[in-house]
Image (tube, rainbow, N blue to C red):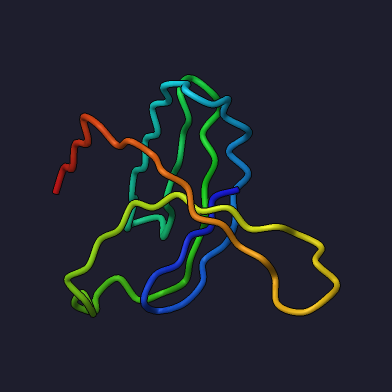
Length: 97
């Protein structure tokens, strides 16, 4: 499950599907400001999008970028939701401004 959060607030979740351990995955993320949309694609799977209504004319609020992997258990009925950290290798990351 991909959770998308910007400084302006939570944008949504996308289920990009399971990934077996030790599997190479290509994740493409594309921001289309004119459509207020962020597209995500794993390998050759169909593109999934998150639509948002935040104002794109505002300047960036923080000079911070993050690419993280984390696991969260759903449907926890007792106490705070447990979470876990995982190790992931991000290689050949390309950013186009």
